[in-house]
Each structure stands twice: as structure tokens, then as C-alpha cells.
Length: 244
Image (cartoon, rainbow, N blue to C red; front, side, top):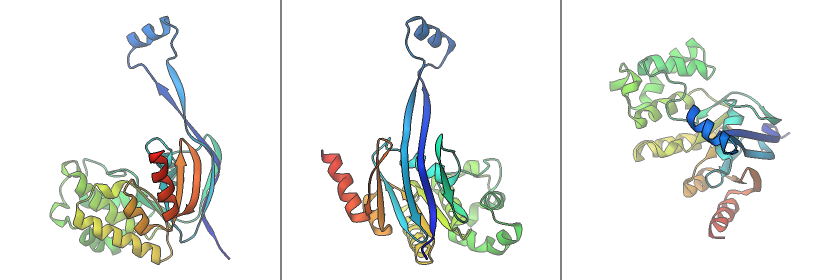
């Protein structure tokens, strides 16, 4: 029996865009009869199911809604209409440094971030050395993370996330932050997760890498689901729309 890890049920998400930044601007715009805000429809009635163990690339050009959809799946945001169901533990990297406190050390943030991702103190204790070894930043472990580079953030955050043994792993453009040697390690670890039967949902503009990792491609266009097909076809269709 096939089990769905993620169910996106006719989801719509809107954002209110404000055009003024000060009371003076607001007064001027209002006196001229101009709208102070307008509604941006990031996702419009999107529905899809992702099976357990699938590796899915969410594709689309800027503003298509893919990062918004990933944040909804992660639980960071909620849909305005529709619902999302996720089976099992969700972990991943949506923003560099998300879940990290700048005034705490790397060591302290391992425990903080691990707890945020649902790990117990005992689990973190057991996996701590593996997390640090994987990150490769043991020299800086007792330094406050506000002094970390974006690459160091990525290394530590990725190391914590992949050691939570997630059922659903989310990645949003984050692999572009790390240096090339660590990118290779990160991609290899993601491929291991896929082989273990974990569900992967990935957003990236690096189409060759997405083709290498994912088996299915979901293409979004202006908030609508445009294509849902195998990854090779999805990448080709996306490139064709770029030329159109």
C-alpha cells in the first residue's frame, strides 16, 4: 500500500503588499486616491500529493510560488484556503540560520535547533559528535554564531537537520550557500536519505542538480500548478517557457 507523505489540498495563499513606508507617504498616496496596498496571490488552488520516499523538485521562475509552498508544507506559514497534511517528522533548510540564536554558540545552537526539530536532549547527546564531525566546524563550535559566515551557518544547520532522521526533508536554494566540497557532501547525504525511503522536497534554480537528485518535477507558474511530471520532462518544460 502506497502512503502519501504530503497532501496539498486546494491551497491558496495571499499576501498584502504595502506601497508606503511612512505616514507622510501614506497621506500623499491617500490624498491622490491611490491604493495603499494590493493583494498578491502567491498560490492559487494548488493541489498535489507526494508519496512516501519520493524525491520531488518544486520548480519555477522567481515569483512562481515554490518557496511559499515549501514554507506552507514546513508549517512556517498557514494557507488562507485549503489545507496541508504531512505525515511524520519534517526537517530541512529553508533559510540560512533559521532556528539559530545569534548570541548563542554553535554548541548551544545544536541543542536549540535540534530541540526545535523535535529531538530530545538524549538524542542530541547521542548524535552530537556525529553532527559536529559532519559540519566540519569544530574549531568554531564555542563561538557565538553571529560571527559565523553564511557558509558556516549552512554547514551546522545542515548537519543538525540531516541527523534528525526526518520523514520529510525540505531544501530551499540553501545548497547554493555552501562551498563546493561541502555541497558535494550535502548532496551525497541527501541522496542517502532518498535511498533510505525519506521523502525529499527541493526548491532550486540549479536545474542540473535537481535532475540529479529528484525523480519528479512540479512546475509552478504565477501561483498555479503548471506541470507535474518526471523531472527530466519538468526541467525541459520549464526551460521552454523561459524561451517562449
